[in-house]
Amino acid sequence: MIQPEWRLSPPEGVHEQRLARRRDNTTMSSNETVISAQGLTKVFKDFWGRPKARAVDGIDFEVRQGEVFGLLGPNGSGKSTIVKMLLGLLYPTRGRITVFDHSPRHVQTKARIGYLPEESYLYRYLNSDETIDFFGSLFHIESKERRERADQLIEMVGLGNARRRHVGEFSKGMQRRIGLAQALINDPDLVLLDEPTSGLDPIGCREIKDLILTLSERGKTVILSSHLLADVEDVCDRAMILYGGRVQAMGTMSDLLANRDATRITAPTLSRDTMERVLSLIRDDTGSEEVRVDNPTQNLESLFLNIVEQARQKEADTSGATSGHRVADYLRGDAAGDRADRVLDHLTRAADEPTPGQAPEVTKPAETVDVDKLAGLAKAEPAPKAGVAPKKEENLDKANEKLGGLLGD
Image (cartoon, rainbow, N blue to C red; front, side):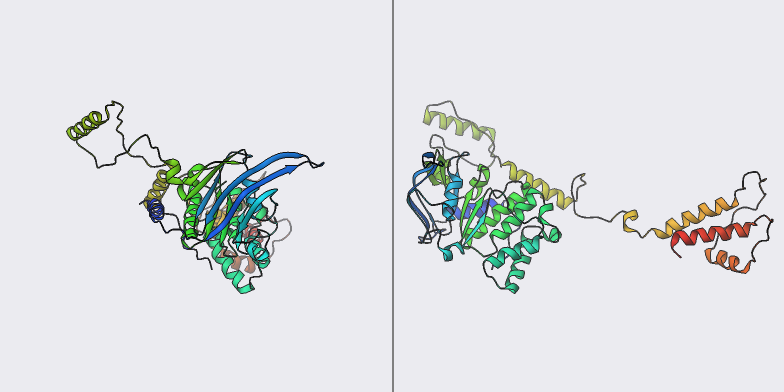
């Protein structure tokens, strides 16, 4: 079962260290071939059977167990077509493709695959629990096991506070999160992710990438198709770059990104004299004056996450979203006593004011009014006679009746 052990990496560079260890480990993937394609070709035809578009044109590639393999290319390069053939939704026109040594249409093979499409096609009127339970039932997972997995997955993707809301009310980022949860409900051995970080904030993007690394470390194979090249660079072991349905480049990330025409030397901060000696030695050895010295930089994502983490530790003020605080008094509804006091003051002041055409009476300074005392006076005092002007106590009696109506007594 999937365990929700992945969390946002702290600012000490744990994500980068983890990725470096994976790439330095030559045994990070086994020799078992999960996906194999030879001469894979897909030609779409029109209504009359005439060739209309050659989406995939004779490509060969393999993906081994435990690898994170990237599919890159501009729109229309054949990435989605390859994914659909891996899922058994499309037949190749020519060539051969296998998944776990079987046809992609093999039913038992499909049960070992998890898929997150580019667009989340979910039932709008189901909540998070019902959505995960529905997809879990498609894999014939027992009810108790489905509930346990659903609880873990919903907490893992950060939707614990929105599990009772309808999925149709979710933002795009929240839909990507619940879509990822449904893709993992069957604990798949092969995970196909199509633009998994689309619509997510930087923290969510880092969490998704950490999850991908966790799946790979467990021996899962991940196929990542994304236009966000920084995400592919951060997690993929190998990548294939497509254009026009053909493979333009394929290899490990270190091989694809290496600049063989330059050398970088990283050292602690050097004194000016030491720097001049080093630069002089390099210029004499290379015979070139084009030697540049600068400071190492981090990517923007790491900088953003470091700043957010430091702000959280310092509890810095922000005008943006934060964790919940005390609800406003007027929303909590526990300020009824204060409201009653203000109503009582208003009513007693209104009773003391003269009616139109009546001369104002000279009264003593206002005293503190006791509601219980007023209620007792109202019961003990007889009803006023006809034609007699109401007394102050009678006015207070009317005020008390009004107050009782407002307070629901």
